Structures are given as structure tokens and as C-alpha cells.
Image 1 (cartoon, chains in turn blue, brown):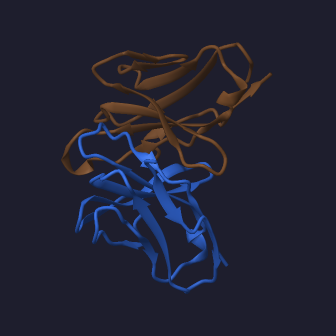
Image 2 (cartoon, rainbow over the protein chains, first blue to last red; image 1 turned 135 degrees about the vertical axis):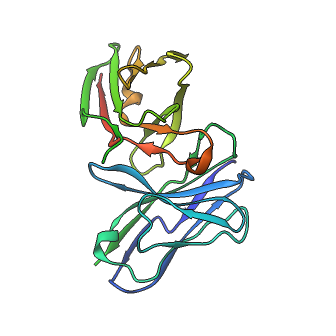
Length: 113
Length: 115
């Protein structure tokens, strides 16, 4: 089954404790992206990757890191989480040239205390 | 600044009637528009899209209309069904260039279809 898989689905952590949210897709997509969803703001792009070893900042990259060492994986790293990073996070992927029809994971709900 | 706006946080409709969800945008560089649907505890799923060279696109019960001069698009669902109850996000993108792949989303509209 074609899918984007995020782990964990739910995470509660404390300020300053490094964490990684994993994202994996099995559709051989070149393009992958991370979004966060906050009430009243819709989804905002954090980082994206056009292909392996090619990453760039989205609209709200502060406090986040990403890497793209393999085509299928695009982890999101929070080196020192803060309470304002409490949010619902989505990973998405698509083929380049696919008119931006992106496929989303089920989401990771993160709470930073 | 919110470049894509959905000004109605919620919409309630009777089963069988038409649902109309609205979206406005400010960036004239946007040339491709999408609607995504999201159920609780799931990720958004693609519903329907429209290119700026068209003013209408239909897919079954779903039709998207684009008015470029007004920078406005709408999603019509006819007839509405209880299973359509979800959050609907409007999104816009610019083809090519450094913005490739970036979707700019609206805030979402919660649609409730009553039996």
C-alpha cells in the first residue's frame, strides 16, 4: 500500500530534550516536506527536500533541522524543543512535476512541557 | 500575512443540499489551487485541484470554481453526504522556481453535514 508513515503518532516531552520524528514514504517520491498545523493558521511549511541531500527552509524553519540521506526518509529533528513547538506535524511527499499533489502522513501530535 | 484565507471557520449543511466552501488569496503568482480534506486523526488527503488557465473543474460530486480577477475560489459539493463531514483546506502553489512544491494553506473550514 502506498503511504507516508510518521512515527511516533503522539509524543510528550520536556523543554530542551532532543527528539526526532521520523517520516518514510514507499512511493519513490523525490519531494518531501514537513508542515505544522496550528489553530487558526492552517498548515505551514517547515522544511522541504527536492531530492537526496537537497533540503531548504520553508516558512517556519526556526528550531528545526532535517536531513535527507535516503530518498525514502526525511526525519524532523528538534535539537532543543520549546513549548511554542507544541503542534500537530505532518510529513508529505510527491513526485517532482506532479502539480504539487502531495500525499500526507497521519500526523504526529507533539506536546513540549 | 495570510496569503490564502478561508474566512468561514465552520459550515453546517443538511444532507442532500449543496455545500459551498470559499477561499480567497492575495498572491497573484499562485497558479495552481488544491482542496484537501482532513478527517480527525488522519492526514490531509487530496480532493480536487484547478489550474489558473481554467475556471472550473469537476470530479463527481465535487466542483471547484476559480475567479482569477477576484482571487477567489470555491468548492461545491452536491449533494452533500454525512461522510463529507471533515475539515477542508484550500491550498495554492506557484509552478517552478524556488517555490516549487510549496503549498500555502488556508486556515481550514469545518464542514458538518447533518442527516
